[in-house]
Picture 1 (cartoon, rainbow, N blue to C red):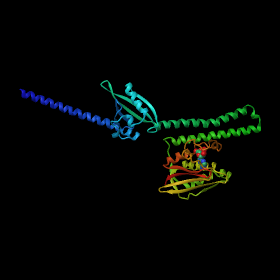
Picture 2 (tube, rainbow, N blue to C red; picture 1 turned 45 degrees about the vertical axis):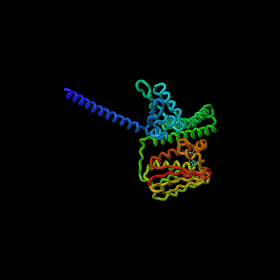
Picture 3 (cartoon, rainbow, N blue to C red; picture 1 turned 120 degrees about the vertical axis):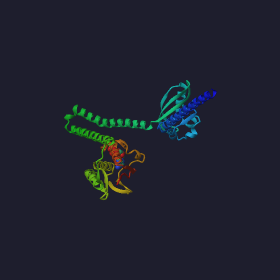
Picture 4 (cartoon, protein in one colour; picture 1 turned 180 degrees about the horizontal axis):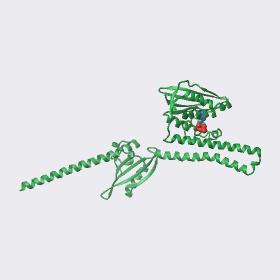
Length: 368
Ligand code: ADP
């Protein structure tokens, strides 16, 4: 009898053991899944205990703060990531036992904007620690600032000619219309400002078209020598007016696979600037340099040049060395930005070398 009872118990114990080991391996599987998820997250994840000692950090945190998980674990949060703002988010979540979310602009240990979310971990109704999720929103905020600046710039650029047009129309309506000589001058000024609005809106349309994802390039075999010749010929009157010599040294047979109209615009914008910012009796030279499987096309001028501090930003939208001068010359501040976009779309790069007072070399590199 006793023998049978023991046998039953052993069987029950064995079943229990099998269940237990199945449970353990299930838990192990779940743990591995959670770990894999946390490890692959782009957001930084830090778990700390109730004394803010680090339990674990994921690889994103290692990258964000240039720390090593191995060295971090077991140390106090502030010892590893020396930032009081993040530490205070953890403290608050632990103290208030609630979810805390904050946007932090860090300058130390890294220059970034973070969205930091801290959730307390509850165990048997008391706080045992806190999980911190850190989103790097630096790029997003940068883009927002850029968009805001762009809208402000566009509004300002449109407002200036519109205010002048309105002013001159009012003057004409208030009596200047009867003054034959002056009224003609006023109309001419109105025309100039209307032309300005026209070039601004067409440049803006070009830009938004180039920036839209649906843009299609109509690529064909393009002869860069012929294109540069045609572009220079289009500026004959302006070259003559300033007595500038325009030379195209690109040899025949320099072909690229490109959208011919877009490349025409690149030459037009670069030559237009090379004339506008040149001196009387100046020189413009267009030539080709070879670099491996690429062509480098240079538009060089003997103009006023660009101060070194401005060259890194010169291809930005609306960036101008001298705003008033650019406007006076009929510029919109968008020409170089359009050039950069077009060359980017062709898989190329743009650049500039310049010496103030001596001249500039604007170049673009395209695959052969
Ligand atoms: P815009 O010419 O309409 O002002 P761009 O985007 O074409 O606008 O050029 C931006 C600025 O870069 C110009 O206002 C000018 O200050 C500078 N720049 C461009 N090309 C030249 C050049 N060849 N020589 C000197 N400055 C230049």
